[in-house]
Amino acid sequence: MHYRVTIRKEGGPDETRDLEAETRFAVYEQIQREGGTVIELNESHIKRPAPRWVKTVLRRRVKREEIAHTVKNLATMLKAGLSLSRALSVIERESDNKALEQIAASLSAEVAKGSAFHESLSKYPRVFPQILISMVKVGEESGSLADSLTIVGLQMERSEELASKIKGAFIYPVIVLVAIVIVSILMLLYVVPTLAKTFTELHVQLPLATRIFVGVSDFLVYNILVVFVALLAIAVGAIAFIRSKRGHAFLVWSALSLPVIGELVRETYAARTARTLSSLLSAGVPVLEAIAITKDVVRADSFARVLGEAAVLVKKGDPLSKAFAEHTKLYPILMSEMLAVGEETGQVASMLKEVAEFYESNVTQKTKDLSTIIEPVLMLLIGTVVGIFAVSMISPIYSLSSSI
Image 1: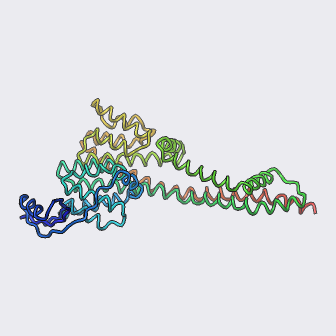
Image 2: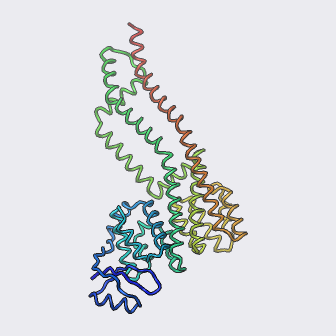
Image 3: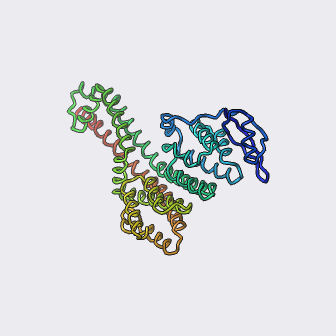
């Protein structure tokens, strides 16, 4: 049987725990052995840990921003004096996300049984990032779990904010481009056939551009289902490719080649690398382990290779800054210089934090500037598309009216 019991110990706050015992008497006996007094005892229907297939599905239903918010709430409750099991129970009850509620219930049950929190989190590798598991492990070993959760919660929050701002900068142009494609297809399906029929009846000699539009229109009209399926397959394939490791690497490589976008990408990855390393090192994670976790967080092959080289150099006794100094085409020079100063003064974590804040601020400003730059480019694109269509379809009408 599962029981939720409120315990009072001399000199400490009341604690609520979930215990598994055969009878109520066994619960009282266990608490007395621990030197506590049972204040309240109720049967508890604890949700069993989710099976593996459920955990795979849960990954898609729990967003990173929700995890960051949960981590910050846990840190606040632990600092206020709540036990970890009780804090997880609060998360379970207040969560609006059913998947997160299920996970919190499972974690609470595991912790109540005596499992280490980081071990419980590691059972959900698709939900909780490695940086969180490592930080929790360090916090449990050092007795500063609340501080570790505060640090990693801030790191995750800043990371999500940065990603959100970059995505936000590209939402407007994507919407405009999609709208252009949709309007173009509708005109090819409904406007062009009507005009083409008129031209045919009047035996008008069509210029090349008009013939191309009419040919595309005829193909769409007679093969609309095939075109729709093809477009859907291309869209799904493109998304799947971008989400794959090779596709992500290709996307980053392509972005680095662009004049304005390339600098934005470099500074984004510099901020992510610096923020992650700073969080891990300030929590007491060993340097090599911190580099390995950061490499996993960064993901992009080109940037991850630099971190792999950094690990090799650190093992040889070289400074961490050396690897970044050798790859200034990826990581800005400022990062290696600031890191070198941090190594000289023994303030590596704080220097990396300053680097992260500097580049996060830079990226925020550049995404705003990018939106300003993109607007006239999009207007020019729309004007060009409309102009080409107008000239192609109006020129035969003009020729016809001139010959009358």
